[in-house]
Image 1 (spheres, one colour):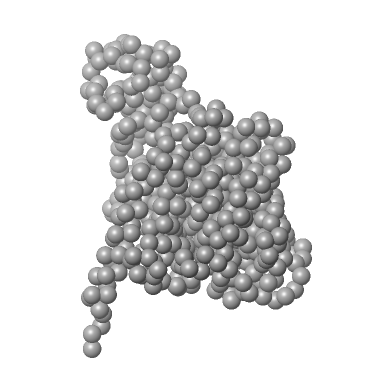
Image 2 (cartoon, rainbow, N blue to C red; image 1 turned 45 degrees about the horizontal axis):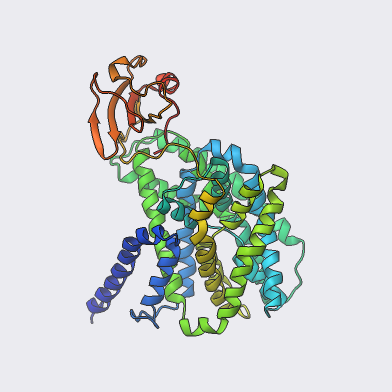
Amino acid sequence: MQLYEPTATAFLLTALGVLMGGSALFSRAAGRFGVPVALLFILLGVLGGSEGIGGIAFENYGFTFRLGTVALVLILFDGGLNTPLSAMRQGLKPAALLATMGVMGTAAGMGVAARLFGFEWKQALLLGAIVSSTDAAAVFSVLRGSGLHLKRRVGVTLELESGLNDPMAVILTMALTGALLSGEPLGGYILLEAAWQMVVGAVLGIGFGYAGRLLLKRVHLAAGGLYPVLTLALAFLAFGLPTLFEGSGFLAVYVAAVLMGNESFPYRSGLLRVHDAMAWLAQVCMFLMLGLLASPTKLGEVAWVGAGLGLVLAFLARPLVVVLCLLPFRFPPPEAFYVGWVGLRGAVPIILATYPVLARAPGAFSIFNVVFFIVVVNALIPGATVPWLTRRLGLVSLAPPPPPASLELTSTHQLDGEVVPFYVDRASAVAGATIAELPLPGSAVVTLIVRGKELVPAKGATQLLPGDHVYVFCKPAELAEVHLLLGQQMEE
């Protein structure tokens, strides 16, 4: 008896290789044209599907839901690792309001719109809940592709909102799916359930975050490649245990990652790169699966409904709710409008749209197909205008550009010292000075200069020029004095 089919396996791996390789290769070109990379992945999935040139027959919604949940855990964990606590303190209040009241307001607004387009009330509200949360990965992929950097307050608010608003969308979707199946009217229990999930998720997330900090600093593993295994285990545990206690595992994962990402521990830079790669892989798989599940012939039946609701979300529901939520925080009108406009949908609606299908809820397949159109329209209209609108509203950050190269020390043990990058601005006091003239403290020393695409050796007579990225080795106790001399430390 043949235990496996080599030809079928080879065909599957070939198809996956073509789809994923094409997604990666064309992502840069998509960014240049202002098109979110997510949309490119979806279109490649459609081309590879049963009605496309690939001919891959894929209709496994259960697998999509499970793999999508894992993908969202990876995306949220990576986002949390790269969120500084200073950003949390600066933008937590507006982001938290957007992640709760903003999500509910968007869901309600889209529910009313869906009702006007012919859906029954419970189906309409369920559809609104599915598309109510944003995806920072789609937003910042457009910004990175265009080379733009947002002003800190706006960027922080968008990033934190996207990390915090997924739990509310999940809670609303599951509660409304249950109400649709049971036929019972909606009650205030939804708010109580949401509060319980948020509290449990936040508390256990904090616990896992501090436990992860302690574990990463105390445990010395045999090889650097084992550290990502450990942090991945922490991410899965941070999601799984709160979920078993009816808490929000998604919130717990994000909170735990924020706490771990703001602590120094061995192999930190390597871990961040690994989790960034896993998050990108998760996004590619998510959107490719959405494209494979989509059937162009069935999509044509709901095209005008999906396109219409996509326009309502982009022009009315999301911007109006965001402006109202940000009023207490005195956001200038351009910034409030921008946060409302740049609320791209991505991974979460893909996962949530499969949940009613698995539950066999009435109208679930129509809802899934409409969600497809909403994601596409939302990616095209707000997504393609992000670079232009950022410049038009004057929201481009004046922070120095990131260095074209990076220098780091990789070790599985905690080291007493670090290599820190600085940018030499035209107004900097050290611009034009030689390295020998720098009054660096104690053991601090310039190790390397990156000048455009050129690596400049750090010699005493080497002159620091505006635009240089200077790497300085120093002890932790000397870092504050080095900051006074060279300015603000750069984020690589």
